[in-house]
Image: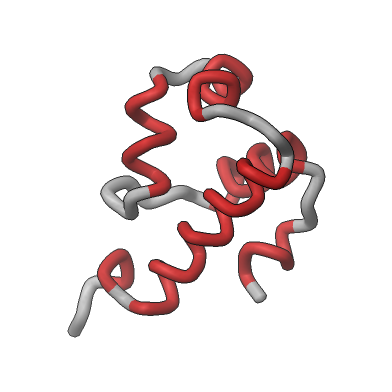
Length: 73
């Protein structure tokens, strides 16, 4: 079974995360401060190295002014 973090679907998801951050006019370091994580964490999330749980997605959606469905659609 293929790991879900390596699928095209997950790649699309992390691309949506990055696009939402950019659309919100935020830098990785700004988001990192809001979620109390290092900037490298946001970088690794956006590159697909780290997998997010739904609560983290919910927090980022709020920061970016998007619905959770935006990322899952």
